Length: 326
Ligand SMILES: *[C@@H]1O[C@H](CO)[C@@H](O)[C@H](O)[C@H]1NC(C)=O
Ligand SMILES: *[C@@H]1O[C@H](CO)[C@@H](O)[C@H](O)[C@H]1NC(C)=O
Image 1 (cartoon, rainbow, N blue to C red):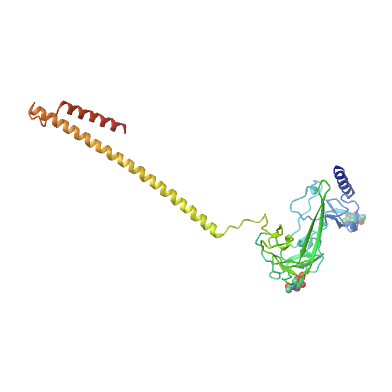
Image 2 (cartoon, helix red, strand yellow; image 1 turned 60 degrees about the vertical axis):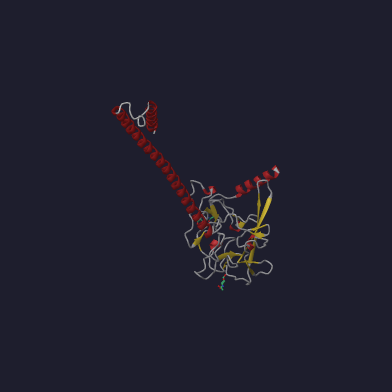
């Protein structure tokens, strides 16, 4: 395993050293796509393109919005992005105008083809947020429109990418592209006719047959990256629940408030009753005393005994105690 890794590393080193620096010599005939990875290969290093006269000249444009670290060199200016209506070809030799139908384009470079006029080509919106083009595509090296309707004859382009992981193990990925209307159909490779895209839970054999572009265990499923769609009834239910919750809390608080007020009211009432009782006791005490002093000793029925006076006094002190505690 490690030996193979070293071989791969050496191979990469060798490839790197073989490339010419700026203004070095090159041959345009060596421009090609890598058989396995389909990456563009040229004699020049990542800063140059091979001009027709056999010299590596500074690249004139770039495709990536983000600048690759391999293009960062303070001595060499970073090539610009191309303005709209033009594209940067694989060799980055110049910004070129977009290609019309039947014109030449490079592998997997739909962006090199001019958009069809407004309304000329149907693109069915994808409900799963899968990326779609504008109806133009580069198929088998030529720009065309994706306008084959269901049941119509269509063209496919099959590309197999082979890569190697750090351990030297290879992996392949085959991509089949076609000119059926985007979002509507896929080109069946046996009959070369456009079949309608499959809905969720229909049985499939490849991703490209599914509207969701995700075939899992032979069934079309929702792609993991698609956004979660929430039904209107969920919004309604959530709203009603929140409203009910708020009303519930409010009525609970009101109820608690009423209870607290009621106990307070009862307490106050008791307090006033006690106060009135206290006042009455004092009045009766005084009148009893004055009555006794007026008719000293006679009329036993209305005379206040010593015990009665004591009781009144003790109830007075009790009332005072309770009253002062509040
Ligand atoms: C190729 O063209 C470039 C720019 O036009 C020029 O600077 C260079 O000298 C030429 N190289 C040869 C070998 O003619
Ligand atoms: C479909 O696209 C091709 C170009 O790829 C174009 O020549 C042809 O006229 C289009 N057909 C329709 C019906 O628009």
